[in-house]
Image (cartoon, rainbow, N blue to C red; front, side):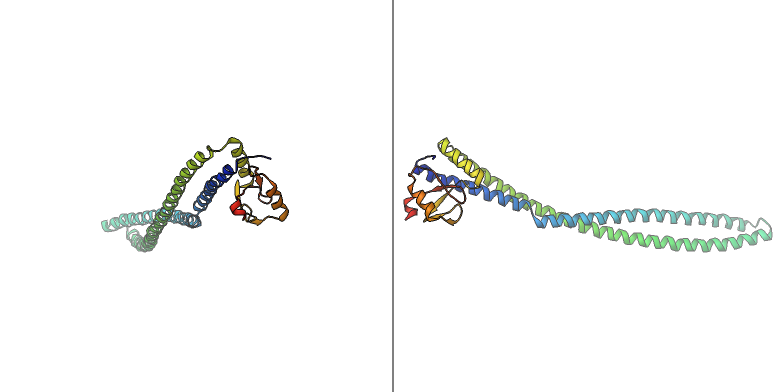
Length: 246
């Protein structure tokens, strides 16, 4: 059976307290890093950005549609201008001039129809650009909100990391004060059981939270004060004290 002075075994509780603190800090860091509100906002922003991309694509398509409508109007206006000049010149046979008049009527009707199309596209484009601006503002607001949450999270993680550094330094200093053999037993127990040492307090193991059986307590009472004994349930080192046993 491994041995160590009872006073040294008792000091293991200080080491366990620091290890427990480090475990708590790791859990806090994990909980802080896994932020459900941030995750939901990231998902929401991704969907909003996707919608904005679709809207931008629709605007680009509508802008091309407007250019085609403008080109169609310009083409008809060019023909109207050409025919009007021929008509105004009076050159040509009466039949030709009459044909020109009929063509101008048709062209003016065609221009009116094309201008209606052009106006409809322009109004649609204006509406899309208004939506684009509103959508962009909403996305920017979401992004700003996300940045704020991420800054808060990172600040919290930074604080946890600073505290971890302080506790780790204290733990390193304390661990160095133990005899290597005792520290090795503690470290091995901590690695395998998740807890290295705990009090045996009025027959109850604070490592497992369980009351020990009469047989287990009898075996522990038989052990010498410098014997290292272990919790039958949690496997951690049990720290005994006459005061705690009373």
